[in-house]
Length: 325
Ligand code: TXA
Ligand code: MG
Image 1 (spheres, protein in one colour):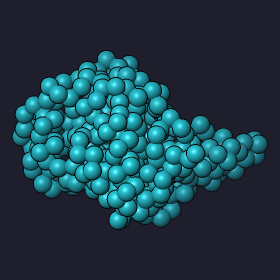
Image 2 (cartoon, rainbow, N blue to C red):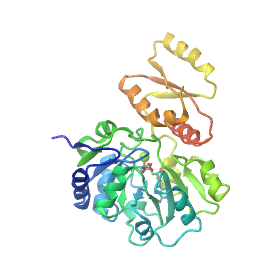
Image 3 (tube, rainbow, N blue to C red):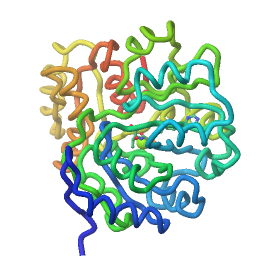
């Protein structure tokens, strides 16, 4: 029997959400859409359920999870203290694609934070995610619902591809609206730092709290040593094909012709329309090209402004070159 259940993206059917919430409350795994990408959810305060996420994804245990909350009281219960800019940022960007790293309350299990003293919190606006959190009535830990290192899932089919029956239920609400993950902002450092660029741009943040720094991409070794989040590892979001990046779009076609003449299976990523459209489709394009057996993907990098910073970051990681710049 299939574990995929269709649900309306704007007005989710209550009985579907109730069935999903029941699975979560019993310690099971539910994949669900958010405005960014599909997440693989489990009860955040149940260490046994949280461990299942790591097993299902083949995720290394040093990679901490984002905890999704329904409302502010739920967030406050997971925090040790209120960081200075927390309330201002929350009033402006929650619910939405901004994840805030804060000092964790004692009740947050080490399994969620990979033993760190900090926890990453986010309040999604997607109606299905919001309804699921609402009916579950408890915080839900959820990384992106892909196998570790694969492109993030923006459609339920991607979740099936990577996780299949390792998950108890997949809520299918169609393609996710934004397509790149949330911005992860560390409020425990001063000045605050973007650990991963995402759906809320650096410019939007700076309008509210002033200058914001970008963490520089670092390798797995440092991530394992607890120096940074692994969204910061160099090779992440990677397709099986090799990815070659170009600042200058004019160079792409000559390179494609040369590779084809050598008998290679080559494709050019479609970056022609708006940055919003590219963000929505970039992960699905990488997956589709893999399915077609493409060996080399050529891609024009968008400029690092607005949503462009996040898309660039993912493409640089897909090419194994670290991110953000
Ligand atoms: O949009 C999103 O953020 C999606 C949806 C499902 O909410 N989630 C997501 O989760 O992308 P994940 O696990 O794939 O990426 C979470 C990022 C990782 O880079 C992780 O290292 C970082 O957040 N992170 C989580 N907890 C952290 C912590 N305590 N300190 C520093 N970084 C943390
Ligand atoms: Mg991920």
